[in-house]
Amino acid sequence: MSYAADERDRARERDLTALLRERIARRGGTISFAELMEQALYHPSLGYYSTLRGFGAEGDFVTSPELHPVFGLLLARQVADAWEALGKPGQFRVLELGAGSGALATALLDGLAGEYPACAEAVRYVVHEVSVSLRTLQMARLAGRNVTWEDDAPVDVCIANEVVDALPVARVTVRAGALVELRVAWLDDGFQWTEAPAPAAICHYFNRLGLLPPEGAVTEVNLGLGRWVADLARRIPRGAVFLLDYGHTAEHLYGRQQGTLLTYYQHSLGSDPLIRVGRQDISAHVDFTTLASLASKAGFSVAGLTSQRQLLQNLGLDALRTALPGNADQRALAALTDANGLGRIGVLALTRELPGYVPVGLSRAGRDRPVPAALPRLAPEPPPADFLDLWREAFAGEDEAPSG
Image (cartoon, rainbow, N blue to C red; front, side, top):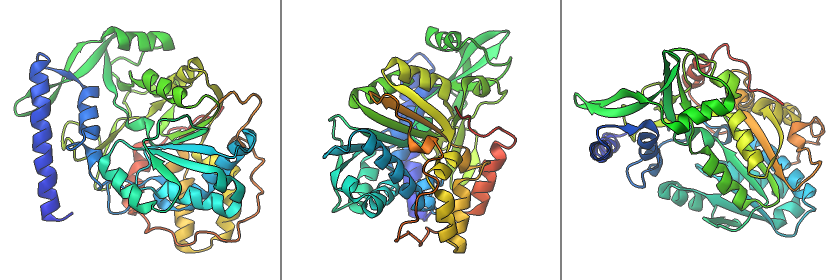
């Protein structure tokens, strides 16, 4: 990063800090961590996602679509499978939530055009993007394609890759068998954690699950997940949803002594979200048990939960791997399915008004698909090895994402 860019980032951090300090004063001395996280990530001009610095080898983190376009090609197979289950409609609306750099949309649409031309002709691709800067980037990258932004009409399929883990969360601990909320105050010229009795919403969250984290454990809960799922259900009267994210079942997630909140800054992982506010990404693993339960209440059927590794293999990755012998390709494809890295990402598949439909990514039926005549062979610049190594170390020894 250049000196000028770094100074701009620091100036934005100072402005965001002043805004949050004012909120803390108005709230009587503390705010929830969820409020800080929301502003740190999503403030329209000062939040992390208002910049373009996050993605790829030059950014702060690596996501699957940036590693290799084969990721999008394989998801295109899943999208085409859903199109067939819906009866091959002449207008087929696909929604991507949080499209990042536009890499997934580009590769997915190319994959449909190459393998499923009738589906490609029917597709109307819709992007929901809260960041003005990212929307500008996406519009430039996807210019000339049948893509629209901020369309509120119903859709047939929704894809969200690493979206739910960036939704604001509250932080919680347990003291003498009681739930305690970790809130944020401004003390000694910096943001500091402070404890308060957990509000009813947090107590209800764990009562519904029928569990309590271990004494002294620090963990995270997404109290806004119900609203998020309800908004999603409103968009999809009939169709399928594929949510790809870091996460676990509630029993696993809340049985840990340490939570899963991480920060990402210049390809380094951290665990302190109260520094570099607005200058670093923040995420926390998804509670798939609660997400699936809320989806069922909203009218979805839970088709299954698997790992990214299993999903991509079921969609035919191994045959494509054989057809892409280049070192850069092989390295990227291995990273996509690394059982201790990106391969452990969970994939929750939901359907609505599609009785009996089992997405092809949850079965072995798609493993032997023929290799397309034209494969994307120019992999992006490989990410720094130390970043992927750090990520693996952060969650070493954990089971792969649960399947069901």
